[in-house]
Length: 224
Image (tube, rainbow, N blue to C red):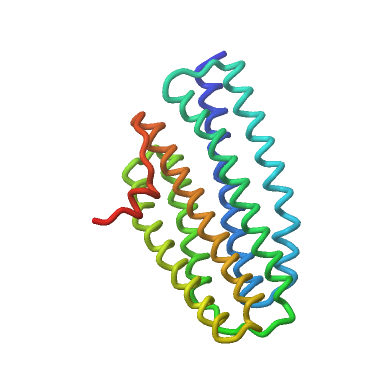
């Protein structure tokens, strides 16, 4: 084994993490568009591609285990690989949430929305931004960038609250809105959970680089 061979395989691992993360961003984007634009083709595409994300998780996991078992990485390289094993689990779960949003989009296809979808698309864009931030923080070992997820998580929680209370008001005003209102709250919940998984990635980066454990969600929800 040479150092170069390990470095090359670690670079390949980085590229595969980036590829999986990019596909995940695309899944979130298309799931949101399928809902806001009532685009069933996009919804079905998101659902179909979830299997690709699942397979990517398995492939990257095998690669990580191979590197640990046969290349015997040390120190920072080992922490990088170990963190990758945890990150792909969060990526896979984010993909499941995107798939669930696409499924809800299909369920609501024949319905006229009780209100314009304003804050849900904002949540979707923010979720994508959080995935990009967490992924770049991991690739670059950037703790400062990981900590920017605190303010993004605060904004996500704020938007979720807006969606929840607005849908609830429509549901209280007219019981006929209850099924759709519940579905839209579920969409917001899926996006909020994607954000939570992104903060998980940020926490892993901080631990990987500095060896300390930080709960970004607790920091985001604590008063100044």
